[in-house]
Length: 159
Length: 137
Image (cartoon, rainbow over all chains, first blue to last red; front, side, top):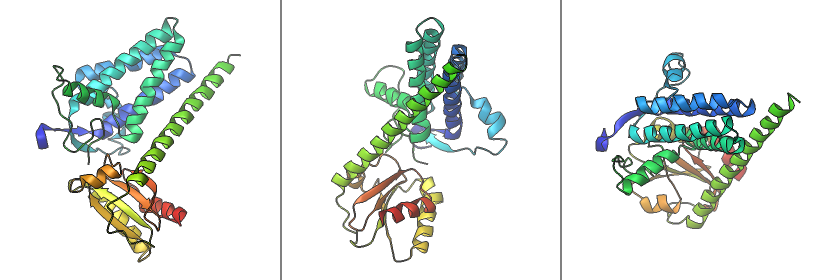
């Protein structure tokens, strides 16, 4: 792998983003704040484990069924982990707001997660990754990775 | 009343999604507009023939596996009636910058005067490009 990059399966990331979008949309339409809390918990657990929270949907269901094929790219896994963790924190704030009387604030945060996940899924731009690389440029400890060569920070690397 | 709230929320969700799609369309239009303003340096373009400007790089697998075959297919179908201009974004960072290319493959559909009319970020099938070329005329 060039420049110390690792293999990152972007199909698993996309499935994760799609699951987050669908579940948060269902939570909003059905007005089910606890579902936002569940999504937040899965995202945060995924970040802690170093993999997409909804990886199980991909690895147990979609990939074995041949519905989604792996798309392994040379990339840094850390920014994606950070982005998911950041999204998980925002989703947790959304759940707290929606559960404890600040519904507008809570659902606005849930929509922020939906929009940023959709931006990543459909446009290939990971806002959380861009923030990670920005913190790296500011030399914040713990943010040690450079974006892949020739790739705009946050954009999906070339296949 | 019990059904009204989910319905209203569904309408709100649809409105937010529609607004997001409109914002995305606006971004694409801005990219296209910026490309039109900066569309310079294409000395190989032959006026009079519509074309595809295709940005790629040597290590782009999607380009090799999908985009280039799609463009070959398109050239076969429209033999002599279009021009395909391939640009390596790493070799020509000036062109990539002028045309606001952030990732590859990126394809621009050019009209007969070389003016960019459509942009595709990511893989664009031969059928999609053909449809875009037909709209350009």
